[in-house]
Length: 162
Image 1 (cartoon, helix red, strand yellow):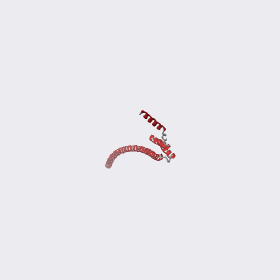
Image 2 (image 1 turned 120 degrees about the horizontal axis):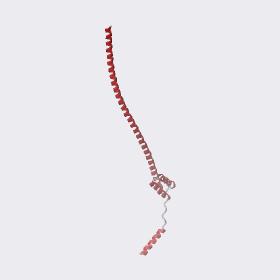
Image 3 (image 1 turned 30 degrees about the vertical axis):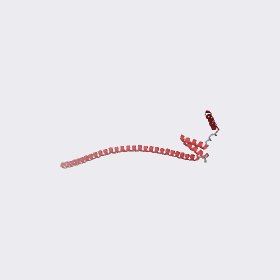
Image 4 (image 1 turned 135 degrees about the horizontal axis):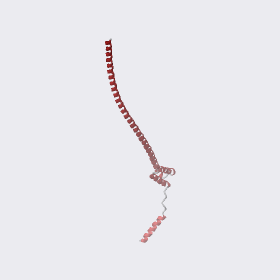
């Protein structure tokens, strides 16, 4: 039985050696695999070019349909990424502008608080000044009355001397 096993192995080896080599992959398939690997590696721009090359060189190949779909999906992905980057930049710019506006508002609020304090202090000064004016007016009225009284006394004294 060993003889037969040996003969079977030799026949199998000879059959493998005499069978034709597997066909080499089509260039379009090789390029498609290469483009897919670039996508996996994150080399989106190069992959987009490779998909375009497949469509340019092999428009009728079986892989052309998948290359077209992959290229369109990748182009949409890149456009979406660019839009996300623009929107992120816009949001960051608006956030910075909002922060500046808040700082400006806080400064104006501080100025307003200080102005209110100054107005309150001036109102106090004004109230004290009005009190002083009222006191001085009352004193002036009293002094006028005293002066009138003195004038009358003086007139009466003059009349008595005559």
